[in-house]
Structures are given as C-alpha cells and as structure tokens.
Length: 441
Image (cartoon, rainbow, N blue to C red; front, side, top):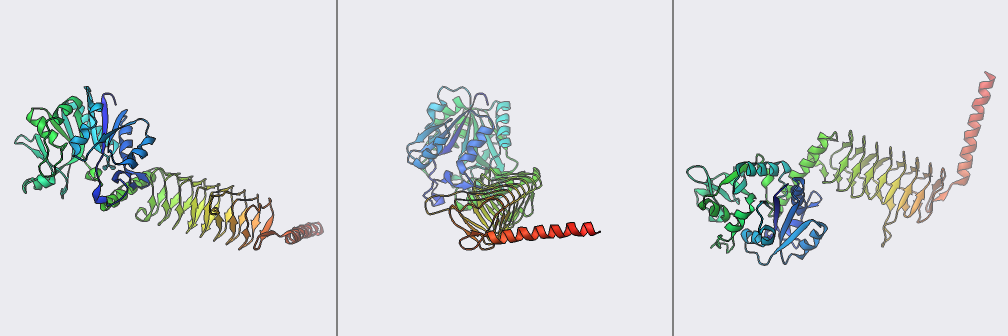
C-alpha cells in the first residue's frame, strides 16, 4: 500500500501469561501469535513493516529472523507504548506518509477491517484514525472520550478512568493510523504517566486534539476481532475464535465437518471437496487432504500427512509425515509414521509402523493393493510389495522387504511358500472344473 508503513508493537513483558515463552510466541491454532499480525499487514500490501521488541527478548529476535523483509527496532526498557513507537524513530523520521500501528497480541483482526480503517483515514485526511468497538463489558480496555461535539478528545486507560468514564462502552482497540509527521511531533509531547511510570501512546490522541488536529474513528463491527491476548484465558478464547473461523472457511469450500464444536483443525490445512470430518478429530498444520475422504471419529493427523482422494481414516488412527495413496482404507486403531502407500491399500485394525529406532525416523513403503493384516507391526525401514499380504499379528522386522504378491505371516514374518503354492493349485483346479462342466453342457 503506497505511502503506508506498519509498526507492530511486540515489546510487552507479558507477565500475566506466567510463561518462560514470550507472549507473542504462544501458538493459536498451530501458528505463533505474531505470525498472524505480520500476515494481516502483508495481506493489505504493506511493504514497509517494522517490529518493536524488548532488547531482552532474544527468543523473539531469533524467531523473527525468518522474516527477511521485516525490520527490527529495540525498546531498551519497558517504558510504555509511546516509548516503544519512539524506538522506531528511524523508521518514522522524515516520513511524510502514513503509519499503521498494531499490537502483536491482537491476532484476530481481519484484513477487511484494517482495509476499512485505512480507507476511513485516507478519505477523512485525519491526523489520527482509531479502530474502536462497542462492548457491553468494556473492563480492561481504554475508553474513547468525546467532547461536547462528539469529537474524540482523549483515550483514558482503565486504571486512570473515573467512575463515569468507566461507563463508556466505546473502547480502544490499540490499532491506529497516523500521519507519520504528526505522530513524530506528538510523541515528543507525551508525558510520563504518574501511576504506571510509562509513556502511553494513547496520550498522543489528546496532544493532537489540543493542537486542533483531526481525529477520526472506525468502529469494528465484530468486537471479537480486537481481543487482546494477555493471559492464558485470553489465549484459549483466541484459539476458539480462530478455530471456528478456519472451519467456517473449510465448510464454505465444500468440506463436511459433522460437529465443529468437537473438531480441531489448525491453520494451513488443505481439505478437498466432499471430504467428511467426523467428531473428535485433530488435524494439525501442514496436512493436505484430497477430495471425497473420510476422517474420524477420534483420528489424529499430524504435520506432514497427505491423504490422496477417497482415503478413509477411521477410529483412533494416528498418522504423521505420511503420504496415503488414493482409495486406501485405514479404519481402526492404527499408527502410520513416515509411511508412503500406493493406491487401494488395506491397513488392517491395529497396524503399527514402528518408524523410530531410538535415533532416527525411518521410512516405510507400502505398494499398490497390498493387504496389511490386523495387528501387523512393520519395523522400518521396510517395503511391502504390490499386492503383498501380511497375516494377522505378523511382525515384519527391519529391512525384511516383502516381494510383490507374496504372503508373509508369523513372528518374525516369513513367506508362506507352501501355502501360496497350494492356494494357486486350488485356484487352478477350480478353474479347470468349471471349464470341464461347461464342455459337458
């Protein structure tokens, strides 16, 4: 977006999380909280994005290295949000454009809401435009205070608000658009808050008002978008909201989720049309499911799992880093790790692929139309050939590859040569008898 810069504030201490992990690195539906905020700015095509972090938060600094296009600025001491923005003075200095400021702990705000906020800011030519919302229970939020002409004159924080001010329902989201030049000048006039010993970014609004600058608001229609994550309870709420969003999007694309309340699907999951997801199923990020599949109930698909079209994964089955071929049946009580299957394979109940040897995750390959009998254990690495069969309870030891169309059984599993020959002989005899009967007729 031309002439717009984005500043993400991620320098908060996050003490209410009671965690050794920085608040913005906690996960929501499989993604770090700060990833959502960065993505929301990218989605509205902001090319210049900076993140302000606490100099002591090395974990955040290390994590953000993956974003080569995001600039980092450091707040030396936790002295409030105005001080945090001032820490990015090099990012703002000399700029005659606009700046969007957002907190890293507001991961639920939608792209459409940010676009509408920016449109309001540009159309009104305001010095500051604030994203606000109306809440029935506004406790913990800063209140939007208006003058006798209904113009915004200040934002008062909960701790500093009088009883009458606490009755105000319009609240501050912590998301703003500013004219960069006006913001830079106003930051120099912000005074230290006597109660918290911090410099509040919200005080910039009062500074601008007293200077006669124009201040606008854009009201967020869905107040849940501005939920700030400050505690474990907030984190649980954010997970629930994001989870339902993910499933709503999938259902709109043609996926049948039988009971969304008991289904857990992370972000970055692809599911094809006419696939049915049954209750109590967990699908982690990085899973790709084809068309016409059936998953669950009580299934767990972990990262790196790919299901081709028309795959059936049933009760109490877990898969990880596995690619399952078209038309495969894996109905009950099985574990497949680091496994690749061909088409139309049958995985019997209780099958386990023992992929971990204590040091390495080893791979297993099961070819087209193989039949894996109930309670088979495949000790990786191992290959099961096309049309091969394992007997119930077979244990196929490490490196004991099974040839195409062969049958193995036992502990350890061995080829059933005599039985196969006898079966082949019986099949030929039946065919011969049928042929002779036809001749007699």
